[in-house]
Image (cartoon, rainbow, N blue to C red):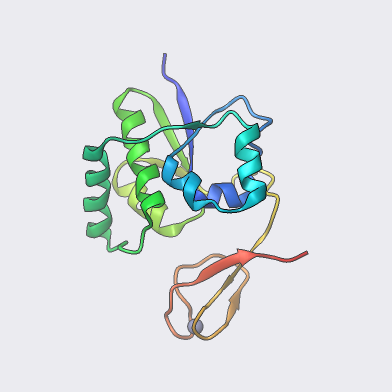
Length: 162
Ligand SMILES: [Zn+2]
């Protein structure tokens, strides 16, 4: 029987996926856990049934090669590790769906044939809202995009303060 896994990257944790009230198979990697430094998120991880798994070195290498080809060189160790885990799950005959709001991660996922689902548009009730901003010139954007329209710098995001 094919098992479906939802693979959480760092952005998935910050977006507030309802980890505790789900019957889905949630998985992530040790690198994502260590990148998520937020106390509340750590508590959620502890309360949830998230399995922490690691992809093989061979799959990690395949992900690195793919990221170089697409020019997504700024990916973190955690980003690379979740993609490698997706490849592992697929190799084992499972269905892996990556939950991510990171453009670079989604981009590399698509070249590797990994299904990715953005968090903010899939109907999951997110706990927080993001603000996208340019770290160079300070321009704010209401929606996610890759680069600043003014100066071309890669946008960053932070949680909107309520
Ligand atoms: Zn700018």
